[in-house]
Length: 524
Image (cartoon, rainbow, N blue to C red):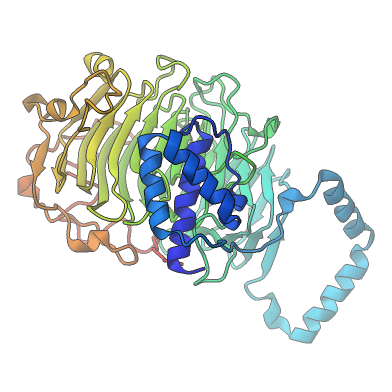
């Protein structure tokens, strides 16, 4: 698939996802494969969106038409194991058990024929659920060949292990289980596409999901991306300290595809994970949907990198109350939506616990006035939040767009936004209120610019040009420490690094960035 075709597929995916979420009255669901393969179906969907879709959807249709030559778009052919019925799967496994001695003998003969080198960097296929404590060991390569659930067990992944996801594959860690993916800076754990290097792309496989027992404000919460009625997708409870495990020095690449009809997974999904869950030194790269999404819970995130997400980089819903420190978000020029998108609860904006995360020392890198313009942050449906020591640079639309009753949140100190640096941004807040007033006239630009919020603005970028490089980026700021007088000291706690009294995720005086060694930015 050419680069232009791949870009068109990503735009059609975004169109399909927004339609499925109600963006175009009269169209309840769009079938992605038909949208790609059948030009007539595609044109009918585009026409109907032009007639009835939201303003954002109509703009997306214009982008699609500019690149669409009205030809079938070829997609990668692979066996979708999700289409195999449970009875067929059981029959296959029964056959393997009955014939295992013969299979083993053939495998042994093959091993002798090719020599002992066949056992170096051995490939292990994973296509069944994990129900006993299991370790994926260093020196092996694992192929995730199905949607695999971890239940009533712990899965430990040792440093340096690579897990390759095939089409339709995903790893789901249920509330009764834990994941311990402990890489290190020299040998990270890597979840990536099973496609060959050079042929990989967004959405090649599903993603990683951790589910827990921490509070969520959505009754009967079940994770997106699993079939309706799948009990193993349920999460949430009353244990705010619950641990979903440990995931550190881990990369997740080329994930986020639609695993089941009308549902999709993100690169990393955290549903109802509590305070004792450890998530740090994580990169999610080129996910087709969101990079990282939290559904409720109180999990904290530290040393986070999200690059080139096809939708939002960090998304939250249903009462997430965690902390984040040291996060780098890079929006790619031809894809993506918002760096942050925060919601509380669409059916009850006052639902408790309310989404109210706290962010310190974050670098948000937009793509400027490029093919795809981005917003830095969208907050809606009752989500509060606290945003400080952020460096928000080069966003083509605006830094902050609040929706719904934002004035109520700010007056109750549920939403604060202070001690930040805005650089190379035309507008701090949403413009054109008369055309689309979705926050009862709340003036984000005036609020952000008030003296008591101590936000700084500058015309020129605060980053070097390499921050926009999609293959070899550097996020070290140009701003010197002496020009960061309005940055604030992070709270005193076991989680926050109080010494980070500067804008952004990277210290301008550090000799080495915390991204070095374990991150990677492959194009394919």
